[in-house]
Every structure is written in C-alpha cells, then in structure tokens.
Image (cartoon, rainbow, N blue to C red; front, side):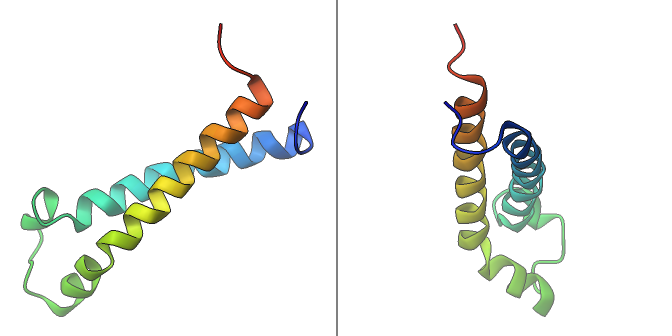
Length: 79
C-alpha cells in the first residue's frame, strides 16, 4: 500500500536520486582528505565551503534514506 500517489512517489524518487548525486559531489569536493586538496584550500570561499562539510553529509544521508524508503514503498522489497 503506497503512502502517497504512485506518480508523485516516482517523481520524488527521481528528485531524491538527483539530490543524492549532488549531495555526494558536495561531500567529496568539501572533503579535505580527497578532492579538496586539488582546489586552493586557503581561499576564503573554500574555507566557507569546507565548514559546511558536515551539513553536506546530513543532506546526503537524509536524501539517501528518503530515496530508499520511497522506492521500497512504491516497488516493494526485491525478491
């Protein structure tokens, strides 16, 4: 039994999927251990970007959970 209209759930799954891609890109680019070293780490803009790293993780985790829960609700558990 779907919680929402199936067409709406499908749209939300797509939107959360795109948000997952954007979220992981933000997480990876703001990580000082990975890709953050390639970009100038001393500029003020990058320091502000780095300071938001934990918020990018929260955005990514919430997006993945919402994406998965809606997919399970719409499609069910795979057999």
